[in-house]
Length: 117
Image 1: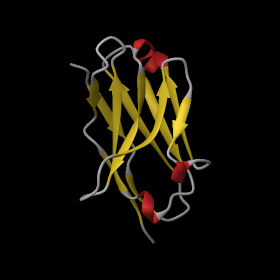
Image 2: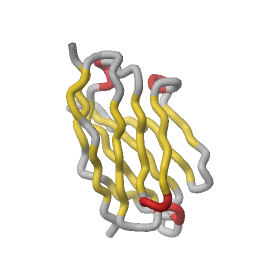
Image 3: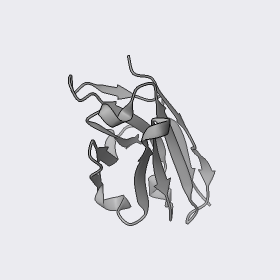
Image 4: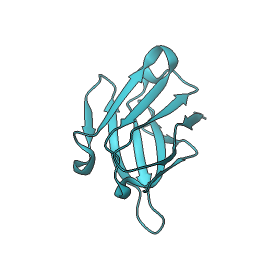
């Protein structure tokens, strides 16, 4: 069972920045993908950003140019740098890891991001 521990959420004002971190209990370099989803109560979980095994990235249109996903393989950690935050970015953010062999997904516990003036 892969364990994912997230940190970095909080309450910020519009235009502020936050960096989310997600540390895995496995060697993330051997996985198929890692990334971040977010969910607002009553809505479906939305894929925000992901990084595939060899480093390619993709983002949902609403965060392009504002959010950046990166990873530190030595620390088994993936990051989500969020700049120019907007109230509509308010959600619970979940880190995920996808196993390369089984393609199973493992999830973090979620971290809350509140953007409000």
